Image (cartoon, rainbow, N blue to C red; front, side, top):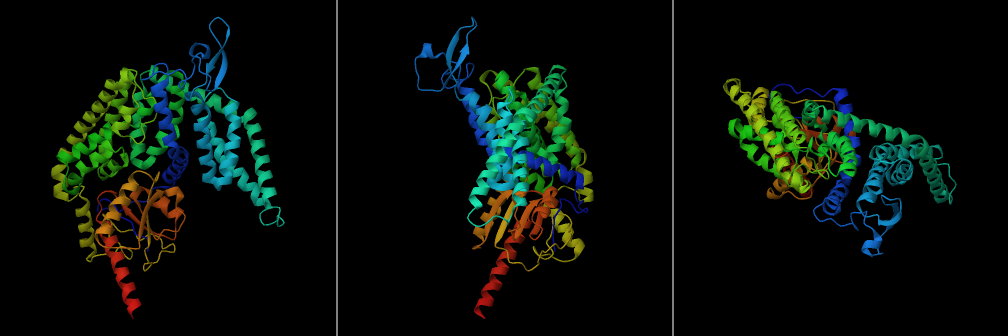
Length: 535
């Protein structure tokens, strides 16, 4: 039986197909960028340090320095023209090649691998060279298109002669087919795809610049903040803003787009409001969540707090709009993506002249979000206490057990923090031995890693051995996990990826009573195994 949990005694609604589809598509986009964020951060630091307006300008590393003036010939150079039309030799530097070649090719390789493994990654990377060389702008969007397309085309072509190749000719056919397909896609992308993607990129940049000029960019929070709470945060930030922001950095040295979703202020305001005016376990856990969200940069930690009382999204939206408005007013931006969205990452990627105003945008966003959410929580405090709808996760568990009249087990009839959904029994066995537990989230890095650490520590304290607890992206679930733990909004997608696993939903990866039941169930299974072995 598949068991899930909710945040309140009310019946949990399954997310609609449209939302799941959007989440799945967004996860695919962000899945191409997220694993390569360290490369974006490295490029951001190099840009912040060595370009002409950087913290430590260096014309060799930053590019553009005249070789004749510097005299060092140990670096890659290129020919260019001075203002008088004379030919000069200048350094290529690191900044330009990284954003032009390295970052798009990494994205393309990741996208191709997601579709068709290593072979798809190689063909997708070859195909992406066509859009890179065929355009005059960084081809992030082109890479996100050609990488998966190359993998998909190679997968389809391989299926034509799958099992039909004579022994001894496999390597010949595989290597030449991939080379021919990659070359053909690269040439086609050069002439056909590159101009279209460049036109699309330019149109998106024009739209963003128009929003900034018309002082309408703060309205983007109307879409960003609700999208984040619906677990589209990585898709929004890394699937859209990171590619466009990187292009802006090449043109102006910074981008405000890196601050639209990554600003930790709105989430901080929500958690501060719960800290002072919340009830029950929500209030008790909020201070710890602040450390994780604001300092650690894992924004997902505050999403359940909004989902427990959806009207709080008003405070998050207002806070987000305030932060964007301040950044627009002072023309601030970051030199690279703040990933994760920690205040430390925001500071590290801020140009020194912009740093005071960037910090002001964080403070302003947190203040507005806190004030509005505080008013909402205080206004509903008496009603929540009277109705028992206090946003208390443990109280929700107790109420559910009281309604059922019995205590439930984890893998049989697992108690949810709200309500039990019997779901479909797609191969789930109530007596399945749990040896492999996987925490899955959108990107497989942030909130799921925290949950895995919490459960792993509980297992260790309980003396449980022989059980692995890991974390990964939902898209990478392969059906081998015995038990998959996800946040409630993402469970339906996890079931689709791993239908034969046991699925458990929680509202808060950091503090869920479900973990104790998981530990108890595994201990009982181990004890039963020991008894069977002795008999």
